[in-house]
Image (tube, rainbow, N blue to C red; front, side):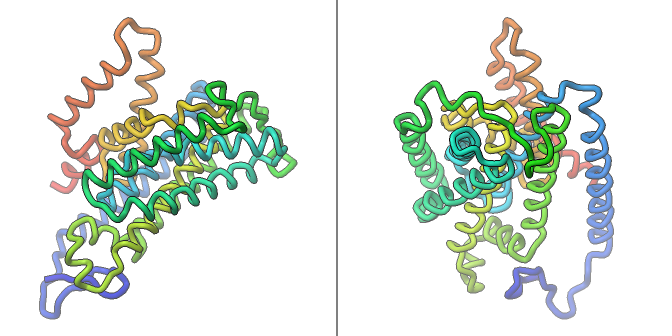
Length: 333
């Protein structure tokens, strides 16, 4: 028998036998994950010399978006249809700060992430009072309110958006107008955001989040303030989502209503489910797959949404845990 202590760590009852084989398998998977991360990082460092860097930057931005969203869906079990508000809202904040106020790029990005976190605090405080489909609908409704605010607000320039956002000089030293410099800056932001999610998931706080996902009533009976943990996870997810949206605004030098629309929230749900929710690497793989298909089939006669829909149906039928989730299941077997 096992239980959770006050830090959220799994504790085994006295006299219970430790599952040695399972622990050994978990350690092997852990080392395999480290190896995959090292190989992936090495590949990302070298890839701009072989692939169009702007395309890879787009993949990294959406991968970070999906990883941040998975923190809420995969590890807390909360399906939010309003994450586009944080993604697009941060893009607007960063674009305005960089173009109108003349802020340095890193400061503008941090402002966007902080603004998204503040929005997450307000929206999350209202949404976590509901569960299941009601939570999803509340986040969708509040996200649509944010969409219309940005549509009408003077500083967003309506449907035109904020165009011509300058990339500027990082810390006043590195010219981000250079595509290669911008790429490695985006890569650094992605690695920082990814590491933050990994650290959250593998902390005592993350263990409590998993306990809430598995059995919320039991977590309450153990004395945890479940609503506070949910709100904390919501704000963290919104902040890292804002980091992704802010970076995308600098990469493409524009912030538009597309990033705030509800369709963007649907896309990140699709990315997470395709890659495998509740896994660290799954959402990033799903984001890379979706963005690649959108780029490759953009000029085809078949609508991209139809192709992505077919692939999603096949994934649900054949890979119910997502691509990475099924791969992990096979390794455990």
